Length: 155
Image 1 (cartoon, helix red, strand yellow):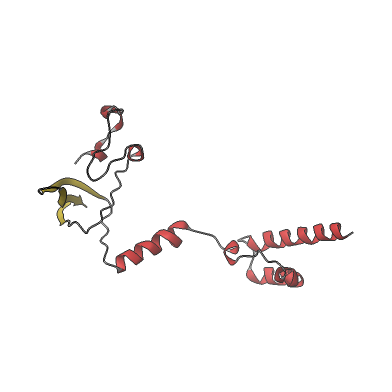
Image 2 (cartoon, helix red, strand yellow):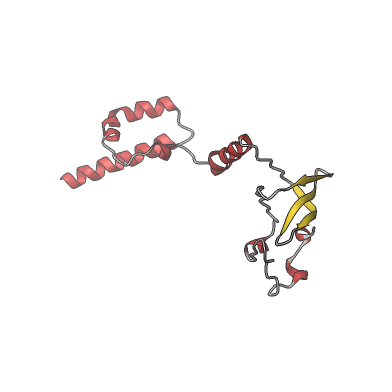
């Protein structure tokens, strides 16, 4: 008897949750329908508020991180294309000192220091297949350049 009562209560909880989460139902209808079962919701220990709302990764994660970084002085330059890199040749090191790029058909140069962090997305599926470091280039010997490297790789 207890098992059947539990399964009926569980079924009612599931139906209530489905009813409440339907976007076409109003808040008042869901409150009136759910009022007799409110004590059941109070006994749920695994109920999390985030389960009731839609999660949007762009809005909740990317936009938050972007606004935080902009407040800290990070300069985002989206939809840009690098044209040329100016390289500083030191005694023991090589480093990029400037990047010439186009954005909205306007050419600009940005100076780069050793403390700057530059994140580049080459818009190519090949970018995750090849890896390089600050001192070594990505190995492209296993790739046929004519088939795999397109205009997005050009400087």
